[in-house]
Image 1 (tube, rainbow, N blue to C red):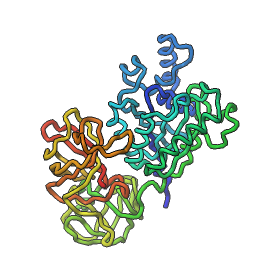
Image 2 (cartoon, rainbow, N blue to C red; image 1 turned 60 degrees about the vertical axis):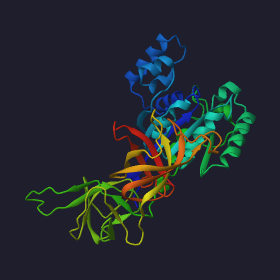
Image 3 (cartoon, rainbow, N blue to C red; image 1 turned 90 degrees about the vertical axis):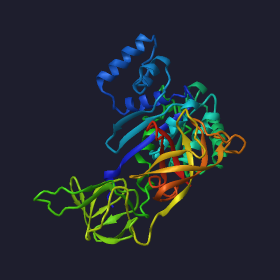
Length: 418
């Protein structure tokens, strides 16, 4: 299987306010030569205006004017850059408690989460909170960047203290791969270039880690899932009988000649052809976008799903979901919402709120059940039509849902199916 086409690494940054997230991203962009000359000149001028002695690399990512003025990050800022080895998308998410929802948004598709810890303060409440969110979102790889090492004289003992303190806490979480790197984003130690100051540290630099971490197996290649997004019927003389089903592979590997079943009808057929904009393929796998043609004429529409006969998702209308609430108006028990799941939309009712999660301790709060903005809780919903889903831990695409307010059409929550 050729994964070269999929070597796009998405990573998210998290940490408390002033832990240096934006500076770190600026440093990565600067040291990997991913900044244009005019951008560099603009932030040099801006740093001078603010009376700063060094160039403030954080200004590269803090795109919103109000952020630049306050020196904090408010919204999720996405940055794209590439090195000869990989392409990267960075989601720089805010550290404040009141922006948990932004962190969930930025991290939901990430392969790697970088959690910044200030070497002077060690593991704080926000560190734990971000690690809990990363584990809830099943981000496959966590990198704990112990930043501002220059302010603790690159002390190895301090680094080891923070490392073991985080490891004790992470033992309770569902995190598979954790990596620790001592850095100074301001000075550039161990970000792109190795630091002479940390001769005791034998691991990779952050950039080397990001370029080489194995992400090809982050996708689910076992359970075949293809939600149909669009039915292509050109109706031209050249493509008179063409009927293709376009969408993005959400799991498994689809090959020409495979026997497949279409949900909800349950009819079976064989894959006749897999088309892409660049020509036909013999096989397709996540996260490719393709058009599938079947041997038989089956009535298929948007929201249907192509799967394997002997490997089907759960089909049901009663779902247990961990929800992160995005809206100022709290989640309404017995409330009705529109729900979006893969390419399908339905309506749902909140049947029950099981508990609110205390995000700092991981305890279940059964006293205060109200789920307000930025809260995470476990709920039971009933949908108006059956969904074809997997548990979120098995498949992050078929296991996630979005809640939309029917009156305002705002996205009010994101959920992970248990």
